[in-house]
Every structure is written in structure tokens, then in C-alpha cells.
Image 1 (cartoon, rainbow, N blue to C red):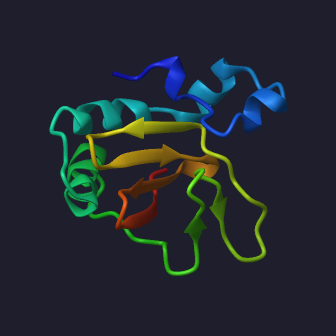
Image 2: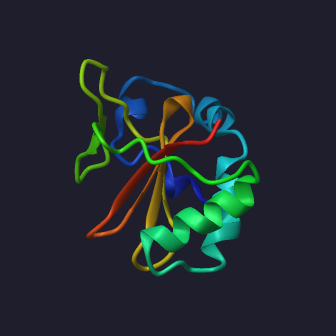
Image 3: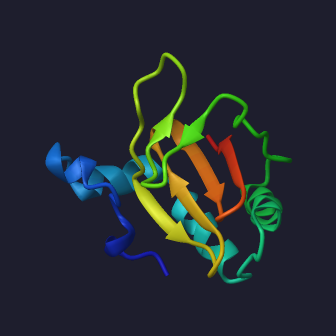
Length: 120
């Protein structure tokens, strides 16, 4: 279940005094998709990717992770772009989590795998 405790895991937006309502609006329907996927409790990132693609409904998700990195804290880094901070860290299961960023960038990750995509 989506809760406010999941919001702004790096505290970046609170420090910038961004209203939580604005963050919720910026995420659009992505938390609803995450909620549906979490009911399936995917065990791997690949399983989560497949389930998110089904919920998304626009075909397979493309992995943009060739140059992007995500720090353990969840900061998204891409060469020559400013760092992006997650709006939310949504646990999809005990092993897989979803981070949602500005520009509809989504990261599905576990301890061993990371998948970066865009769901706009």
C-alpha cells in the first residue's frame, strides 16, 4: 500500500520545501501501477519489469541503464545531467523496490540487479 512514509526517501524535496501534493501529482498513475505489481510480490527485477510492463500497457519497457547509475541512497546519475532524487521508494516485495523520479524515470532494483526505464 502506498504511504507517505515512502515519499522523498533522500529528504531532498523536504529540504527544498516542495509540497508533497506536488510530488504525488508529478508521479501520475505510477504509484497505482506499483500497487498492482506489489500484490504479485515479484522475486526478481526481471519479474517486476514484466509485471510493470503489463500494468503499463504500452509494450515492453526499455532499459536505459547503460550509462545511468543509482547510488545506494537512490540518487539517479546520468553523465552531464544533474542528479535526480527519488519522489518515492516503493517496495514491491521483500527483494525488489521501485524508485520513481522526475521525468517519469523509474528504477526497479534488488541487491543484485538494476533496471532503469521511463514510463511516461
